[in-house]
Image 1 (spheres, helix red, strand yellow):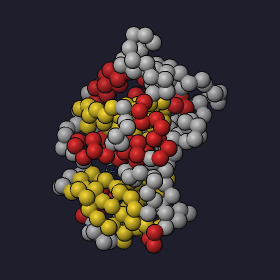
Image 2 (image 1 turned 30 degrees about the vertical axis):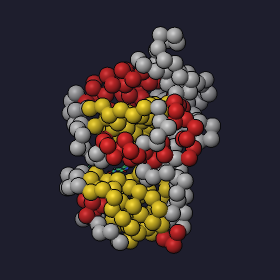
Image 3 (image 1 turned 90 degrees about the vertical axis):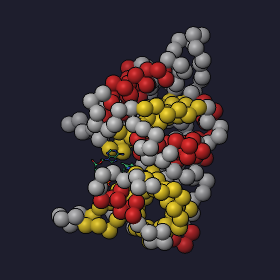
Length: 281
Ligand SMILES: Cc1cc2nc3c(=O)[nH]c(=O)nc-3n(C[C@H](O)[C@H](O)[C@H](O)COP(=O)(O)OP(=O)(O)OC[C@H]3O[C@@H](n4cnc5c(N)ncnc54)[C@H](O)[C@@H]3O)c2cc1C
């Protein structure tokens, strides 16, 4: 059973009717113990009709070089119980949580990371067929465009930008920042955290950050639009690694496109925040 831990909400750094950025402190300064890209599961204490508790995952957006205080950003999702709880809870309140959790993070070798994309990596990051695949850069032919050895693309849709921020700001990612392209796909400037704030939170050493607009979640043209954004990005730079996070409806085809373009499966890390594709039986 997951260990129950406690944190206090110590500050609110940003709030609109739609979203909130909170700072939390662990109990008695106990380190959270997270790596950038990981999340915690908040227990709202709310019980629904069948007695099930409303527990929701939220990614840490601050750097893992600070472990006693950390920040979460939460978007209100319609009448959803978890996101409304987090948007309405008072500063000073004690929150129960478990974690940190998640394998969507860099490791020492630059390999692995959780992915649920069918046909690419297994949960432990090894290729689907069990073989080790040499790193293959995906993108334009050398000589026709800018070529970056070991370049990384971090593509977040919607609220997935939180995990991307944690990943990028983490200590283990520092060495890769200068070769990293960050893309945030959202339906509008006022979708979640304001673009200026997100831009400020992206570490200065990052090669580039761009916001690209997608039709809203659930729109029939969303996947086509996302694939076209990815194709555009791949036409400019060769990438060896990809980190995808957010809407599963979009990310599964993008992971497949990266695989089809020759990127090694274990270098495509995917984290689904919502619309998680069903597991293959
Ligand atoms: C690993 C992980 C990390 C996450 N980190 C964050 C985070 O840092 N910030 C954050 O705001 N959310 C994050 N989420 C989403 C969060 O856990 C909840 O799903 C979300 O807050 C909605 O919960 P709810 O109880 O309000 O609504 P529910 O009633 O649980 O959700 C209603 C529906 O909305 C879906 N949904 C969730 N998010 C979105 C979205 N952005 N757009 C459209 N539909 C959505 C849910 O999957 C569900 O089908 C994360 C999810 C995962 C799996």
